[in-house]
Length: 379
Image 1 (cartoon, helix red, strand yellow):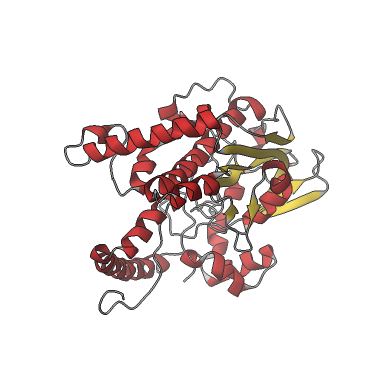
Image 2 (cartoon, one colour):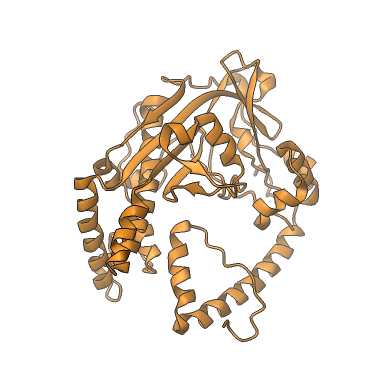
């Protein structure tokens, strides 16, 4: 039974860690009606905002002409210290736990606030302290007994941009294409001097004749998580069963952070003298970005298929994909590495029919299939 007059729809969360709390509210009769009513209002607001955004779009040709202008003639792409694939098996959980962003852990329990300030909150502090203590007690057991396994694989590969596509090559001669990552471009009407970004803007154009590089990666800390969670569930301990899954998710994000740092300083080595505290890492105070398929700058999850194929992720890291592009185990993260100093995160936002058709063609798929994977980006 749903809220009165609710017309139906989809509940979308920006971070997977929020899904469990939403699901819990839907199962709670005391909260379900309020939640669905708020979703209904949110959908109405989204429709209104979308109409305003669409009216301020520019044509694809104009967006492409307003791409990020980089002085490629003077730019020397940093050559990786270690080219090709790097495999990391059974990475240290002790290191990863130090890079957990606890703010998102608390959000998964519907406790909003910044860590560690949340501990002194007069309303939320007591519950936050208890959750933190319980989580770390469980982490102690997980680390000591190696109850979860952290595997990862990455590759730094020669590349070049061709329009809105990123081409990956077999070797540094850049003569034999190995794979293509078609990308989407923001079409929002911009203020003077502000570019319409696309991830391909951060890779040297093929016509420049330079060998640039792109990184790809996949990590997991979910190996063993379902087994451990099920053991708690069979004992009737649903609290710790959920805690295991949430901690596995946070450890996976921590693994992505730790590996990116290792890439910047050692494997790719374009920032060997980087001095970042853990807090600096959380605030992304470093050179380069690691956008993930499914997120605002590259919303199409289908790009994971190419990433996983190039990495041979199943064999190298025990991570697989479902036909709907969900990663297995669930506590996994994958994405790209860009090293250019001007690279930054952005939101593709709404695209028009022209770009939808153009992108579908570049992806080698039909428009209706593309719509399934980027529903929030089409009219």
